[in-house]
Image (cartoon, rainbow, N blue to C red):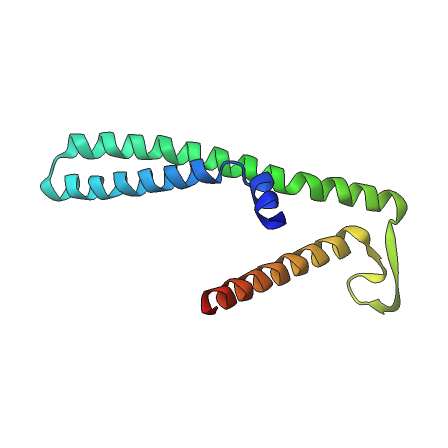
Length: 130
């Protein structure tokens, strides 16, 4: 339930993107057929339409990406107002003894995303078994 809600929030254009993907794939197949039969004019018009749809797909993907990044940037700004760096017990060669909160946040966010996807994949596999 929460997963579906978050997915709808972060990817509101997913259905439109899927439709565009399917249409682009169909146009590519038609382009290949036009190329095989040697009809250059149909091939070019199909390629033009395919490129237009691809640009629309990229716009949807870009705005979905922004919608995913903005909460992270807001949270990072909120955290960095309170804590600017973390003092390490040892000095690292390239970083020294202080580690920026930005680096820690990025590492933890990537790790959390990886673990969430792994959990989701395992949960989906188990639901198929039962």
